[in-house]
Image 1: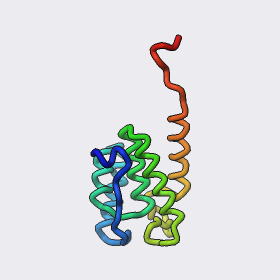
Image 2 (image 1 turned 180 degrees about the horizontal axis):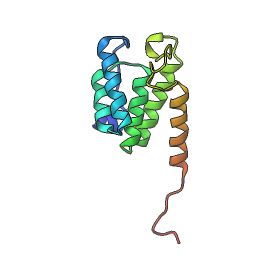
Image 3 (image 1 turned 135 degrees about the horizontal axis):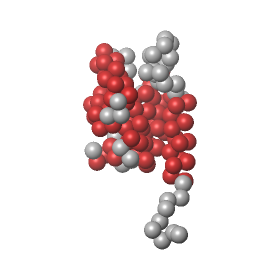
Image 4 (image 1 turned 90 degrees about the vertical axis):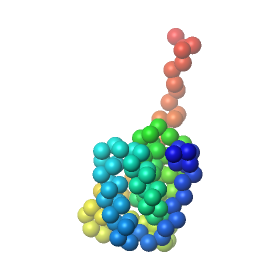
Length: 129
């Protein structure tokens, strides 16, 4: 998981409505729901489709595995795709459940904010009283 842990994964497929992507996102949601971070990361990396939901899932997997900087990178890519003019890079909520219950870029931006507050907190040192 070397590249994943440092935020170097690249998703490059560009047909998010392909059947393979649809089934993959259903499996990904199950891994996300059950906090199976390594399985979630593996599913999205193998899927390879470049869209906001997949980047968000990578961010969630990285955050859950403790890779905060990688999570920040993936959440930022989710925001970029959500704001892109290319509809293929966006999960569009045209019916309930089409984006696994997420709304982009809102949910990715919220996670970015939470990660920022986690990393800004002082850590307790053994030298402190």
